[in-house]
Image (cartoon, rainbow over all chains, first blue to last red; front, side):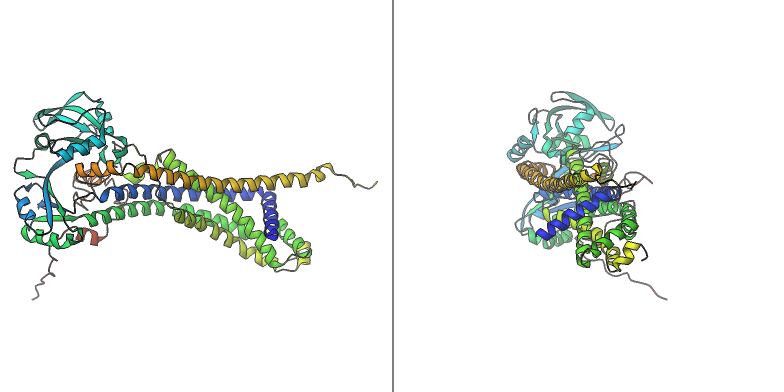
Length: 394
Length: 130
């Protein structure tokens, strides 16, 4: 232990003697680690948010296809699906999109049964600054915070929006809480009757059917039975939805990671160039150490400690910096790239999802290649004749 | 006259400076370890805080019927990638620019798109040969 401490002290002294080189390498490593960590932090955090929510989804979602695209489905199909063994409930849902040209984007319009006790309990849990929409009064709406801010509305305010050739007056009665902002930023939630009017969904039809099963593992079997009864339907399985999301973020994160590859390669070239070129001073230093009795192993150990100290500090600065950038500053710049182009961003309050093990792997990925790259040239010099090294003839 | 100084003040102060530097370096390393530990602690604290909101998240998913994150409202395909026309990034306008940064280069694996449909497997193509 004492010997290792002495070697670490010597290694730190060596790093001081080559302060410029040490700083340049540490800084480059910090930059590369920062970029890769930020992508990892952001991707994992978004994926975690989706996973928190996925358990509540219906087991199956049944959509009608027309001309290869989702179309309205007749509500009467609900009875056929509910009769299948294992189906607890098949609920018609009315939801859709409302395009606003000045925003160049869509709002998500969701209709709910505002008389339903369970719906009112859920609404009371997730909305604030107002009251719940009433089924007796037309046009009452709960909005996501980003949507309300876009329209410039406070609870109690009203706005009239064009719906086809007519107009619809909406009164904001509540805003969704910030903790569910990732799901509700662009949502306009209203009574089912208002949603039908807003989205032009005729009575007897709905957007899709949400199917809940007694045994979720039987989803594939029930999906096949539904497909037999409704040949033109598309059945979306909850597990497949989760898998799609995972793959979407894998793809986006992977693509960003791939974009960072040139920076990583440039860094590796820099490391190789800096560490393989053992300078005259370093050769003399190794010569002196060998002359005063150091073994080759001691020289290599001291060199490893020196490189490990530089790499660890650089990587740690990069990782901590990325953490502050993503979870403190909310990833300006990177978030927009990862999310895609939009004009209605949710307030990004993410929760870290990367665990200690992954952090350790990230640290090792930065430190180990750095240490190994410096070992070979040091070994080549350390095995030379000390006199030759001191005289500068080898 | 021998150009040699027995006492070099700068040389005598070097070991002290080196010791200070090593001390600073060690403190720097310890600070790095401490900041990584602090980061882990903060992450665990934030996670436990988020767990308290699980009931709200589940309630909002029950209300909306979908767990898709409202990250991008620019097209339906980006808003609800799990249930809105998977793969049809161009449905919102003819020759529209694909806003999904990944979609510009890479698509979803085919088995995912195939898996979205629970329809019976499509029989192999019947080729007509002369």
